[in-house]
Image: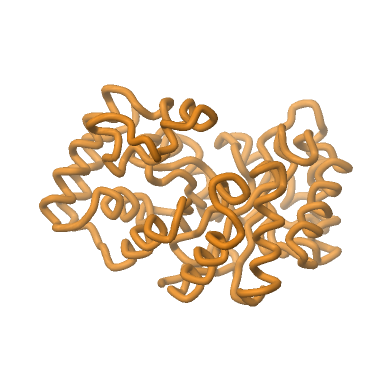
Length: 314
């Protein structure tokens, strides 16, 4: 698998990342081990985790897999923390952020994460306080790099400029955003701001929360996320008339290229300007294998242009 530089930093990651949102819920230790071993054997490195996934159980499983089956040095850990509903319950407060990071390290059984992704803007906490937490984390060696999740373009620019003006604070190198053919609104402000300031984009939900695979064209499969009472709202947010038109175009492109809709949708976002990695989740080994097979897919310019046209941000 090819690797890319994250923005203008020295951090290198696989251009397809492995998400762990289902670990601890739909994915047990055995299945997670199979996924991570398969991913690393294929040349993958970036693994995304969060303290909110299964209330911390996903991180415990990742820690167990790295302890027993996959060397820590083969994995680039991107850890989100301090998210509402997660282990800390706060966003930008210094104590909450550092406590959340320490708890993440304990669950992962590691002494550092490679990319510490801070949550979105917290208007209730001074930016200087949040940045002081970044300073402590990086200076102590608990985080090698810092990034942002859920920021708008102006918020990202404000954080970066403030970090650059503050002695000893590491400047964020990545912006993690939902990005797919269904969610191109980030191209209006966030993506250009990230590129201008030298941050790489880490795209999550590149398959439109599963909608772009075409699995929902004729209904809701019983084993799909949309059939789950917990995850149905997550998927339904991306099912509408506009997305149906985009999905049909993806299906047409896949048929013409002799590949899968998943491969078309993933290759499209993977190769967008500024994207360092597209993070995919998998319920089982077969789903992961389908995503990894996309490494060989390159979209012709005319197909990419057609998909651009049908999915233009509104």
